Image (tube, rainbow, N blue to C red; front, side, top):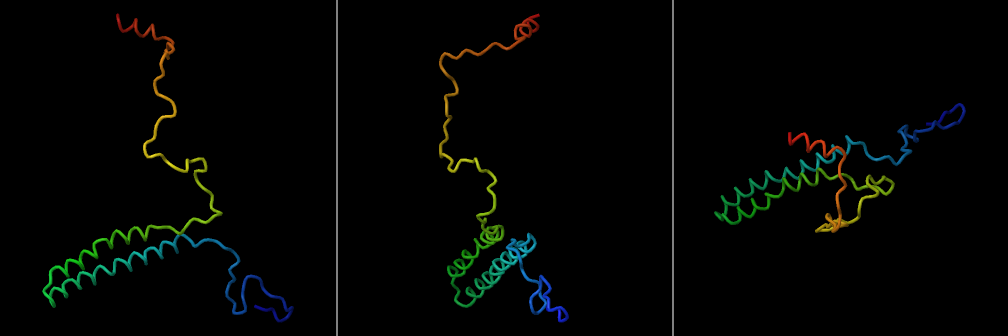
Length: 138
């Protein structure tokens, strides 16, 4: 908005008086959650018409295979809806990695770096081991 007296522009608002976006901040958690819930509901909405379509198809054509095909197509909808709704927005490059020292690849069959038992290795005696053995023999 323009201040007509000093002809100075108020910071933070455009010509119509709306606030100007001055940051590239990510969407709030609540907004992301709201969008994910909408995606979930949209996908789950198609399950009801699939059941109705299967019933109508059976009523019109008396074809059980067509009805079963429609129902089979609706079976993965809840699984897909949950996976899509739980997906978060992609990670940006500026976001820090949580585990920078983590290995990039995990072996399918991991092996120990060194053998667990080495030949010729004698364990060191523990202190007070002789006393404990004597106490038990009494």
